[in-house]
Amino acid sequence: WAADNNQYYNAKALEDAKAAIIIDQKSCDSSDLAAQLSETLFDRELLKNMSKNAKNAFIGDASQLQLDVLSRFLGEVKS
Image (tube, rainbow, N blue to C red):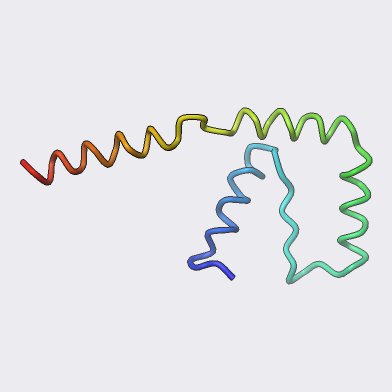
């Protein structure tokens, strides 16, 4: 369980980048899951593309970007 559906939105960002596939557990039974896994795990080209897309979606300096925004915000609050 995640507050405010955070896990879904994190997964959705990767799915939108074609770096992941979201499987809705509410509408998925074991045979659906097995079919999706089989289809995905044995498709080397798909896995290669998803891997490349995941690397491209990664923001390497995200921590620094967050600190920069926070620093600007704190500077405005102090003024």
